Length: 98
Image 1 (spheres, rainbow, N blue to C red):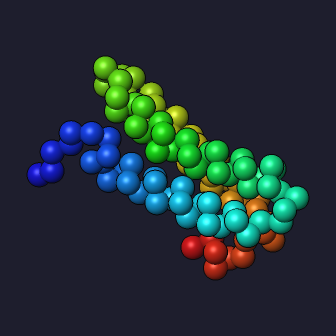
Image 2 (spheres, rainbow, N blue to C red):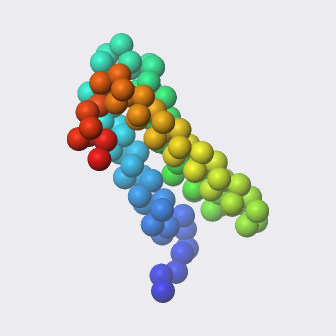
């Protein structure tokens, strides 16, 4: 069994970091007109996922930790929704969505 000393030890945090890096790669191909629009919104929502996991882990109570995990899940749903919109606007193709 792995010991968790830090949020950095959490697999979910590590995967959220990877998601954020991938989001930045995907949005780098968006039209320049979306630099401060949908691309920025997706990036901010993606950044929110690992950030909230980390912040929640640093809190003093399980109740607070769970609240921040809930916020991270909300941000993840936001990212998913925005990616669907980007796909429908043809900024992303179906292959990129996998």
